[in-house]
Amino acid sequence: MNLPTTFNGHLWQQHRRSEQPIEISILLTQMGFAAKVLAQEISRAALVGNLGLVGEKNATGDAQKKLDVFSNQIMIDAFSNIGLVAAIASEELDQVKLIECGQQAQYILCTDPLDGSSNTDTGSAVGTIFGIYRRQTTGYCSTEADALQPGTELVAAGYVLYGTSTMLVYSTGSRVDGFTLDPSLGEFLLSHENIRCPETGKTYSANLSYYQEWHPHIQNFADYLGDRKSHAAHTLRYSGALVADVHRCLLEGGLYFYPPTEDQPDGKLRLLYECAPLAFLVEQAGGRATSGQARIMELEVTSIHQRSPLVIGSQSAVDLYQTFLEQGKAP
Ligand code: FDP
Image (tube, rainbow, N blue to C red; front, side):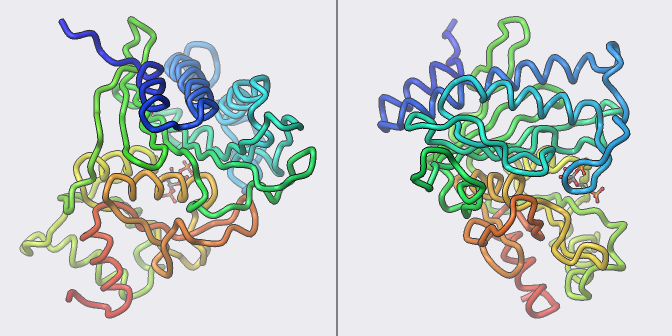
């Protein structure tokens, strides 16, 4: 039997091979630990009264679930005491949380601790998204400005998918690797090495209930994908959790899109801790991510809870979306 590669073993190898700073490996190890805690708590939430709403709204106006609050606290606890993180931006926090001052704390964590939280009470997939930046300001303590960096400045990003299994997928900018949690060992083991996003795919993910609010060119695009007689036909798969839908695109190709709507002219998703980290990963795997107007990675971040339209997945599928957006029809 070949001994599997653990997440921590893999991080150590990457550190030695690519001279990736050891601090990045430590931060990712800590992310792996937080993911294990969250996986356990999410799976037994119904048994310990941790489902349902808290009764409050979060920083971006969404109803807060008990698991949202719990997940946010786990992330803060996991990164507060290791001395490397200067600040955390989270979907569940109004403002950037300053963690640590001084020379050692050179990293900024941006996270959606529980993506797809409307899925929690029905046992459906949810996720955690994270992006890690280097601190840019030079004062003793960090400021909010450190979190307002474009995706091009990410030094590491990834997600955890809590689905039929728990998977951690990450990149530090040269490749994308995926690890599956073996619950009996309590370890993430390398299961998806050097993931490449297929050039095309068979599925698309979008909330079609907003169809009437989309730009007519995007309506044409959805009609084109949904035309079962066409060779371009795609099948609809929408889980309600961005992480789960992007994970499918990463492994099997296709695309996810969340365009602007009447109510949300900038789309719904958050640039800093949802769109940018996922764009970083998908691009590293050979796919593409755009807002329709610009590459997600290059968008200027002016506030931590800024929204952006998102189109992400296989290169050719995202290209096709762009063609429809500009011309209203297939090339
Ligand atoms: P949720 O609000 O449940 O956290 O990031 C937000 C997100 O879920 C994505 O995970 C998901 O793809 C999308 O919003 C679902 O929004 P709609 O219900 O508007 O489709």
